[in-house]
Length: 289
Ligand code: TMP
Ligand code: MG
Image (cartoon, rainbow, N blue to C red; front, side):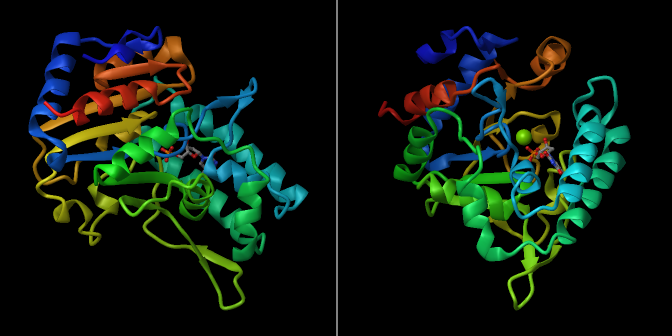
C-alpha cells in the first residue's frame, strides 16, 4: 500500500487500524482532505550537519540584530524551559503556565531589540533554517490537488512564512496561524499580536474568530503532523472529523518518550529528517482508484 511505511524509522502500535484509516482517507477522496501541520521540528528539520537546526524563534534569537546580552538571555531561557517543554514526567497542566512564562519573557526580550521588519528576509537567508527532505513534493502535491494546508505554529509567523517563501512553496492553499510581530510606522517591532500561541494551547481556544475550520467543514478527512504532545489537539476545532491520521516526529529523547508517542500518534517517525512517509501516504491517497 505505502512502501515508505517499511522504513526503519517507522513505529506503529496498531498497524491494522492505521491501514484502515489510510484506506478510508483514499476512499473518501481528495475533495474531503485537509492537512494540519505544526511547523518547527515538523516541517523544518531537527538536526542538520550533526547539529541542532534552529526553530523560528532560534533564527531570530541568534541573528545579528540581537545584542550579545539579548542573545545570552534568550539562550538562558531556552536552556531552562526547553527541558520542561519535553519532560515526559510532567503533566500538561504543570507545563502550561511555564510555557506562557517562557514565550512572554522571550517576546519581551525580542521587543527590546528594536528589530526592523526589513531585516527579516536577510535574517532568514543567513540562517541555517532547513525544511525536511521531501518538502517540495509535499507542498507541491497538496497545492496541485487543492488540498488546504493549515500550519499551526507556536513559533514566529513572520519568520516561518519567510522560510517557506524563500523555499518557493508558499502557495495559495497554505494558511498560517502563529505568533506574528507588529511593527510601528517606522517598521520597528513593538509587540507580538495576540493571542499568544505556545506549545500547549494549540487548540480551538486560540482560533476563535478565524473561522478557518468552519469554512472547510466538508473537509472531514484529516492528516495531522506534529512533533510535540501539544500538537495532538491542533484539529480540535474541525467541526466534523470522519477520519484522522496523526503522524508524529519523535526527534529528541527518543527512548524516554517512545511509549507516550506510540499511545497518542498513529504513526511515530523516530529520528527521521524526511517527509518520505507523509509523501508516500499522500501519493497513495491521491492515486486514482
Ligand atoms: P511548535 O513547534 O510547537 O510550534 O513550538 C515552537 C517551538 O519553539 C517549541 O519547541 C519551543 C521553541 N522556542 C524556542 O526555540 N525559542 C523560544 O524563545 C521560544 C519561546 C520557543
Ligand atoms: Mg514543533
